[in-house]
Amino acid sequence: MEATAIEKSEHISEAALRILQQNTREGESGRYTVPTDRLYPFQWNWDSCLAALGLAEFDEARAWEEIRTLFAHQWKNGMVPHIVFHQDSDSYFPGPDIWGTAKMKTPTSGISQPPVAATCVRFLYEKCADQQQARAEIRALIPKIFAWHSWYLTARDPEKTGLAATFHPWETGRDNSAEWEDALFRVPTDGLEPYTRRDTDLIDAAQRPPQKEYDHYLALVQLFREKKYNDKKLWKKTPFKIADIGINSILLRANRDLLWLMQIVSAHEHEDTVKEWIARQTDAFDKLWCAQRKFYCSYDLVAEKRIPMLSSGSFLPLFAHAVPQDRLPQLLDQLDKLGRKKGAFLVPSLAPAEASFDRLRYWRGPVWAVVNFMIAKGLESYGDDKRAARIAADTAKLIESNGFYEYFDPLDGTGLGGNAFTWTAAMWLHWARYYA
Ligand code: GLC
Image (cartoon, rainbow, N blue to C red; front, side):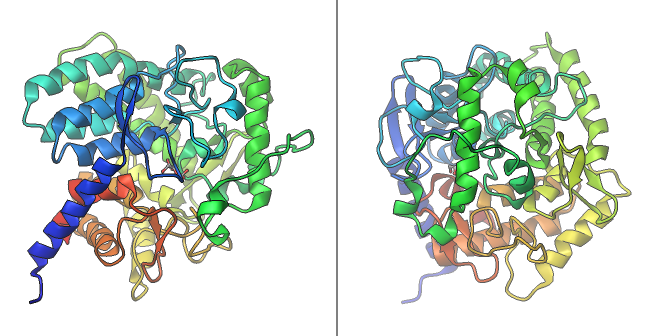
C-alpha cells in the first residue's frame, strides 16, 4: 500500500531524529553534535547552534546543552571558535596541531564562524515548553553572546565602520564561495609547510575546493599561528580582509535578537551598546549594495571594492531586516529570476549566470538547507510568506527525494557532499517538514 504524505513525512522525521542521536558525542564540557561522522568529526560553531533547533523538537534540555557546550570553549577575548576539537580524529585535516592555538584541555581552531547563536537562542525560547529553564539558560548566555558580538565589532572592526571583517573563508561558513577568490590568491604561499588533505579521501574531489585554493587557506592559518592570533597584528598584516555579506547580516540579526533576549529577562546592562551597534551596522549596509546589479554583496576591505557576485548570501540582508523599502522589490526580483527556471531549486549558493557557477562544487552553486532557512525567516519578517513558503517547500522536496545531504545540486536536486548531516536533519525537524 502507498504511504500517505503524512506517513512519509513522519518516517523522514524519525530518520532525522536518528541522525541527530547518532551524531551526538560526549565532550568534557557536555554533549554536542558532529556535523557528520568522519568528514567533520568535531563540534562546529554554527552547525551546533542550528542543530539545537532540531534537538529541541524532541529534547529541550539537550538543545540547551548543545549551545552550552559550544560556549564552554569561548576564548578570553570573546571569540567563539569555529571548531572545538573534543576528541582526536585522523579523518579530518587541519587538526589542532596545525592551528596551534594556546594549550587548552580541549583545543580549538583560531577563527570564528557566523554568529547565529543569539537568533537560535531566541527561536529556542519561542518554542520551548520549559520557560523556566529557557530563561535561566538565556540569563547565563547573554554575557557570553555579548562578549562574542563585542569581539566581532571591535577586534574585527577597530575603526567602528559598522562592518565586521572576516580573516578567513572558513570563517564565513560559505567556505569555498567564488567571492573570496581574488583576495585569497593575494595570500602568499611561499614557505607553506607540506600537508595532506583528508576531505578528498571521503568525498569526490569535484564536490570539494580545488587544490590551489587549499594552499592559500593553509597559508592564512600559518600566518595566524605565526602572529599568535593577535587581532591587532593580524588587522594590520593580513592580505585577506573581507566584509562578508553573510557574517554581517547574521551579526545584525543576532544583535536584534540579543537585544530582544536582554529585554525578555530584564538584563539591561548592555542594552545601549547593543542599540548603538544595531544603528551603526544598519547604516553600513549601504556599502554592501551593488547599485549597478541591484543586489547585496560582500566587500573587499583591502582592495576597497565590492565583490559584485550574486550568491545566496546576497539575500541574507533580509534575515538582518536591513533592506530598505526601495531596494526590496529589486532584491526580490533577483530571487524570482533564480526560481523561475523549470525544475530549479532555490536558493543556489551562486547564481547560475555567474562565471564561477558549478552545480556540484561546494558553495559554487549547490543549495544548503540552513541558508534557505535564514532567507525564508528574513522574507517572513517582511510579511512575504509566499516566497518564504516556496523556499521551505523546495528544501522539503530536496530532503524528501534525496536524503539528509550536506548540500544539493540546484538544477536537479542530487544530494552532494556528506550524508546523514546534522543541520540538514535539524532543518527538516524544526522547519521544512511543515512544508512537505
Ligand atoms: C563546511 C561548511 C561550513 C560548515 C562545516 C561543517 O566547512 O562550509 O559552513 O560549518 O562544513 O558542516
